[in-house]
Image (cartoon, rainbow, N blue to C red; front, side, top):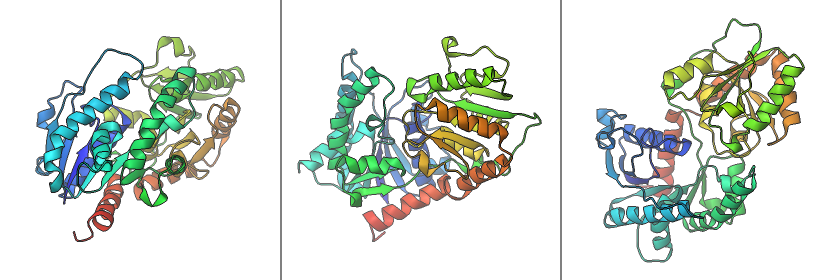
Length: 384
């Protein structure tokens, strides 16, 4: 089988949740001896031509094409403008190879030009699937500027999704969003994301402290809900609740709370250190306004943590009352209530065990890659 994976970068050459998903997707397809023509670019100091984060056996099945992502002066819509130009570069690089592919998997805007040309009837090729991950532009925005950005992105994302042969969804509320913009349900394929097996704990770790330990992992981006979280933390401290809260990520000093209960580790890129810190806590808090299928939740579940998260994106496919708490986005009253419940919960061990069990059975890349390969064989090329 021969597929093309056209991306807006893969981790760690480009950082981000979408890029991490792309990395594991190509890695696991190669593990299963599927030839992948990978189209991507570099935004790091690593030598992208070496593909040093793949094994020698995996490299035999990965055929990379490296492009430069266009840049321009900043103006309203510059990201979309540059993304379209990037898709044109990809189209130029791929158009003479189209007849060699069984399937083309497009991430975000990277397949824009290709999908458009096929829709117009200007080219003939295999089916093209698109993945816009969380479709955050159709979710709640935390501020006017973000709302304006969403409003600008929506028509482009809608058109690309409608014109693609297949639209990938992580499930949960994302499928509902895709249907709401006019994509037929028979074009939507639900395949979640996952973590690698070597990241998954074989057992639940427990710390010696007599109090609950919470953790937040992420950037200080407005939609991540840190402002709402800080409001709740200050209320819990004023009520003399006993707990500890740790932050992993580049949190600016202006957003930090000066209290011995609150610990800031800063940005950490070492996966082993992140895993160690997660494993020493009890509950991940993810109070985002919008999300896709957050890697931070997957990683926390893989370390045996219960989860407090907002009911957005594909999070309902990952979190329920058995392994955590779902709350409405922006609702500090609910967030405070469930954090107090978590502090006093005598059955927290059961939630932690359920999180780990879900990762072991549903959300690891062995399972995910099998789902993808089954889709490719049965739905795209039944003869293989």
